[in-house]
Image 1 (cartoon, one colour):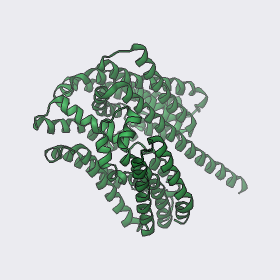
Image 2: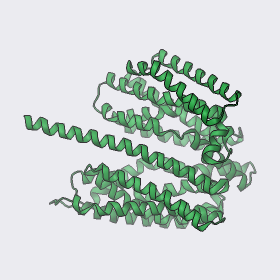
Image 3: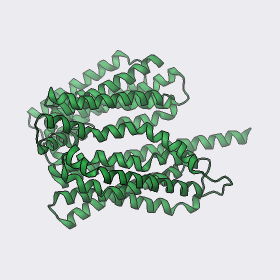
Image 4: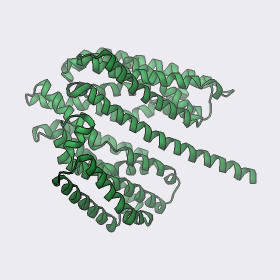
Length: 484
């Protein structure tokens, strides 16, 4: 009995440790991803980052098709069969799926760049993503294997290596080449992704031998595919939507007689500048929600209510400070990060409405943790279809159609998820919390506008606003958070 309790304690501590590792590395990776995005935007300039942004939906779709959710499939198989057979079969499947995906990409590429996207300059950046398709799929197999045997530290280090080497490669090649060729520079940024994955694979491959276990049963291809195919189909809707976004938007603006340069400029102003700045701190609700996940999986409705309230509370609290800063100092924030003010007008006008974005992650994670993944998939699929509809219809109504499409999508998704959580768990947020958030928003907004009118520098203003925010947290909101 004592031995059994001791073993259970060890297992619990292992789960907690793996969760902590995932949260910390997820935060670091998101921060490195943010740094990489800032560096790319500064180095490529407006035209370069516009070309990069419009190429990425296609690249992401074919990366998804090539990797075929092998990370999840191998994780499940390796948890019971951590053998060389599992890795070999996974890599064979990854090579086949990557080859098929690459052939399809090559076949449609001319039609895609010349007629659908109307951006011939994106040909080489997309074409040279083919090595990345192979590398990403192989990397998915290796990382899935380590996740399956609960060696999260290896996967986490691999992710960090991928990001760091990618950033380093980009900076070095950009400065060594010192080229003004826009297509070349964007292509180099895509190759940098391949280099990062390659370095990651070298590290994960070096750790394999010492982790393998002799197993009588060999892993079959069917065993892996039975998990990979349904998982890929489930996640494919979001990637297909992302792929069609620039195509549908381009079609609408083409009907309105907009030139390809105007379309690219309009698309990138939102997707390369405004949205990345507005959603820059999305790692906050994501990290908070991830940390709450283990507490939700086997909990009663009252406990789920408790943790969801906490998750939303600590997601919205910093969002208020971020929203005020971006609202009052949109030009300064954009210039500080991207060395331009392109897209800052959209940030100033719409950031207040995007605060709903911070509710999506906690609500989604709650449904995932409580075995409502199918419901979440159905809702997400409907939302993605609606989004494509908005992207086609709204350009005929408003010049701000692209950002409004994203905004409408977030609101419909948040309210749909919130409604399901409310019906299932009778979830509600006390009025005093909402009222205290409103008071905090107007307090920070008043102070920010006062500082700006007094001519206080941007950096000093942020520091003073942060001090005021921390003061209100320690003397008011910490107590509210503790009593939820």
